[in-house]
Length: 263
Image (cartoon, rainbow, N blue to C red; front, side, top):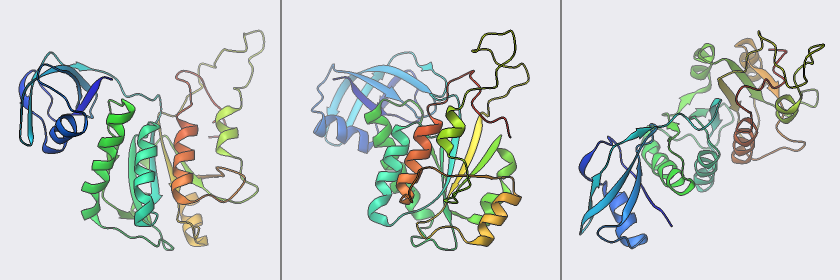
C-alpha cells in the first residue's frame, strides 16, 4: 500500500509533516525510515518523499521535485448545503470529498436544525483531509465558513449555473438533465457537439434542510437564477442529497455537452 500524507506549503527539500499527518504515518500506518511517501498539498501539487527521521510526534521527510496536476473533475461543483445534525456531518464531508466536490458552502436556512458557526470549520477540514488522503484525491475541497441563505444568493452570479434541489414533481431530475444526449446535428456524427455549445464549468446547487425550503426561499433562489431540479424519486436526507448531487455532476464527461440546453 502506498503511503500518502497531506502537507501544506509543499516544496522540495526537507520538511516536517504536520502533527496529525506525522501521527497517522508513524502510529497508524507504522511507517519506517526510508519508506516512500506520496505527498499532496490539496492545491494540485504532489511530490514523492522519503522518510528521513521519525521522532515522538514528528516525521521528517526529504521531498523531491513537486508536480502540479489539474483539478480532478471537469466541473467545479459548490454545494450551498444545510448542515445535518452533528453526528451526520462527517458523512457529508467525507463522501462528497471522495466523489470530487470543489467546495462546501455550509448554509443556514430558515428551517435548519443545526446552525454551526465558523468554529466548526477546522473539524470539517480535518475530515476532508482524511477523506482526500484515503481516496487518493490531489485537491482538497474548499470548506467555507457558514453563511446565511441570503448571503449565498448574493454570490449566485459567480457561477456558470445555479440549481435548486427541490422535491416538486414537475421538476426534471438532475440525473435526466446530465444524461440526456445533446441535440443531433444533421449530416454529422452523433458524437459531434455544436460550436456554440457550452458545458458549464462551475455549478452551485442549493440543498436545504430536511424540513425543506420555505416558499420565500424557493422564490428567492429562482429569482437569483437557480433552476429547480429533483435528485431522486423520494425525499432524501440532507447528506444523502449532497452525496447524490456530487456523484451525478461528477460523471459529466469533459468536452461532452449534457442536456443543459435550456440554460
